[in-house]
Image (tube, rainbow, N blue to C red; front, top):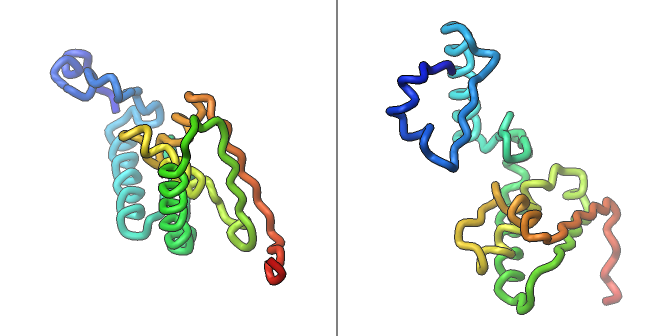
Length: 157
């Protein structure tokens, strides 16, 4: 959206260091701005109603179907990450996450983000599933994701 410079001085969003504002180059007319606003509202509505995430800058896209099927995995990922974070005694240098079975066919980025968020939560109060991977990278923590379709029998363990 195009805003005159005089309007920027009175808007606290432009002064906030955590917010980056750029003009939407594809919406230079009033009609285009309205279409973009409707599209954003539809995307927010989709997320709130179905959990679908589309066109997010800092999070992987997830369809409504994926959001529904991933929900139990996200709960498990949060709990496992939190548990591992609480029992980890030394500085974290790397994390290896294996996805085995049908989950390996899914987009697991949100699961990995959730696990890492839980893992680092005891150390970093403001960490969440959106910023966890970038914070891990900044701290030099190597994250390895492994996907295995075949399930190994554990009958003899």
